[in-house]
Image 1 (spheres, rainbow, N blue to C red):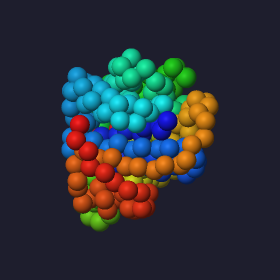
Image 2 (image 1 turned 60 degrees about the vertical axis):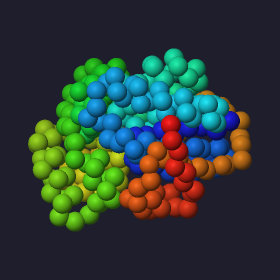
Image 3 (image 1 turned 45 degrees about the horizontal axis):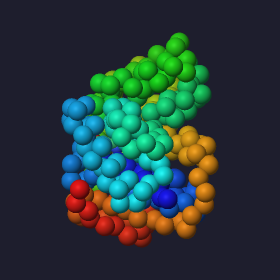
Image 4 (image 1 turned 180 degrees about the horizontal axis):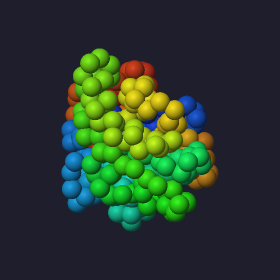
Length: 253
Ligand code: DGL
């Protein structure tokens, strides 16, 4: 039984890439709801509704054994609903990212970049404080980052200006560790890092891999498949850049 890896769009491919590299013999189905991206500025109710539709689709069609929620926004709002509804292990990215950041920080000041949804949910604040309540957390919503990535605008004056202007306040807080609290953002990491000198940058993939290992699922054939809910040329462009020649199927929910 395959593992489903689900994001609102292309961002979760950063997680898919890491998981696929580590678990050569697991069947991995990626699901990108590109017809409805971004989720990050939608209401919690809508995020839960979309997530259940996508999770049920994967369970009904593939009988997936576990669902990796490769999206911070969905992880912030929909994990309990998905677990309840699908009745399979559902792993999110918030806890692993928070644990990783707490292990790294020396001055106990951690920054979080995320969508409006993730920032408003304060899910990272809670997850960091659950590990170490003495750590201060500074958050910054970055609503223009996801459209840049979905449009494959990763270099040049527009993304440079957007990133510089968006992170300029959080760069002054004295944080020594920064969580990329959206799976789209690792693609912009060089630009983000250039504006955050001396700051350690954390993404969640390493700890997600530990969590998947703990599920102790049996080996399979190593099937790779990518499903999307709309056909966009920028998805294909970035998909080829991130994970190469994996077949893509457009599906209707
Ligand atoms: N990749 C998402 C996240 O990690 C998605 C953002 C969005 O759809 O707005 O939050």
